[in-house]
Length: 197
Image (cartoon, rainbow, N blue to C red; front, side, top):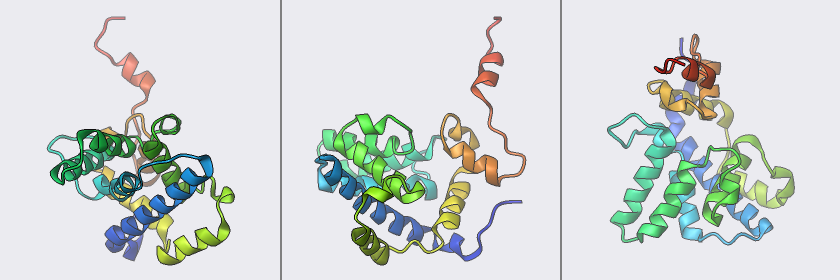
């Protein structure tokens, strides 16, 4: 039996749109607070594309949803005349947005995108942001039943490619919501490797 949240399933694109806009605004606030100076246009594109790989696979190969979104964003930018280096900044920000610890040590767009995602999804740094500004963001881009809808978007986007969650936080979602799903651990991968010892 799959995890279902009722009407939030049908509002997936709207939920992801509002979440992506909140990510941009939270990322911008954190960047200002931390003295980062990300290119605002590249930050916006990173935020708007960061979860697109959940809803529509953009590749012919099975890969992490982050890479689907990153590849799609890079193509979008290159098709519109952005430089290869600009497209790579956005690609990196999206590809690493769920990776703990690394984005904060990278360029301002990658770091800020990650901070915005962390704030919107798990409340990271929320206590450091101006409450009035947070209220304005939520008023313009309401959360609604975000927790249920967001988790459902992950289940829907990953259940048909569960092996792509290896080594990521994404496996937590599938383990929690899909009965019988169990991720293969690193220890099992080493022991099961085709080497004799």
